[in-house]
Length: 355
Image 1 (cartoon, rainbow, N blue to C red):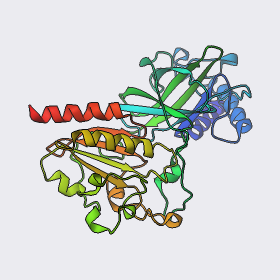
Image 2 (image 1 turned 180 degrees about the horizontal axis):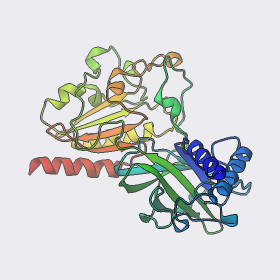
Image 3 (image 1 turned 60 degrees about the vertical axis):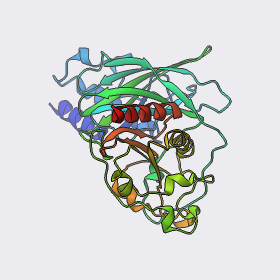
Image 4 (image 1 turned 180 degrees about the vertical axis):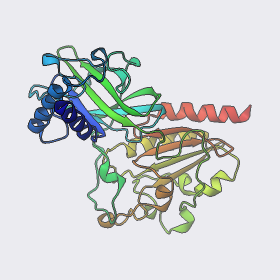
């Protein structure tokens, strides 16, 4: 009974980590204490043998019967360390993005097969198996040195390296989920287990909800576009109308929240470029708005988050929303997004509104 109690306490303590990387090829996760972690894991494994809880067939075990979803085995030879780029994970259909730390801009990205698991229900049989799509980014995109006057979601964004992998998933329940990532090139193979928590409801506005009608700033409120955006090549048409005004016009709207110069993940600039290209194609039918994440981009030493960004409850950046003529959100993209993805979404909304 004492061992059983120890198992439950250790398990509870370890479950407080919302995102934990478990590598079968090795490489310690974003923590700097692999030694204590391993000791704790071994203690959990020993204590678990005294409990009569979960049936053994629901937990894949490796050497010495250790749960493969719970143990990180350091391996100095591991080349790639996955980093979860999507933060707002809730029940429903979601695009999960992740990058590979260690993948240089001159390297060929490995193919990545993703097996999705609902860890609280079944750690053996995956819910889905598919290959992730790699979206490269220009290595010249950088981050302007800056500081924040308040705590910013930008501080929590993680760098994406040379690009991101995107995989669509259906998350059917709250709790602990995991992805087995099997990465391979012509001369190398590695596998990594990445686990994360799923909430009942995401923080950001959801698809199917009405878009929040807030008074975002426009070009009429400033003397120069540099007061509205950190984009070095802004599209003036994206600053002509506020969100609340656009929603009252009875036309589809693209709303992008991004900070090209101060984006820690470096995804904001390419995402905003995609928004500009797609909006120009559909400008006669669709209204477009860019909201800079910070209300004072001209003061990089003391950035303050914009009121419209805060009002939309966005836990990360960038975000792009495609809203129909009735003001209902039909598509929402967190983080990395391609021009083709956005174009397809806008085409669908425009066509649906014309029927």
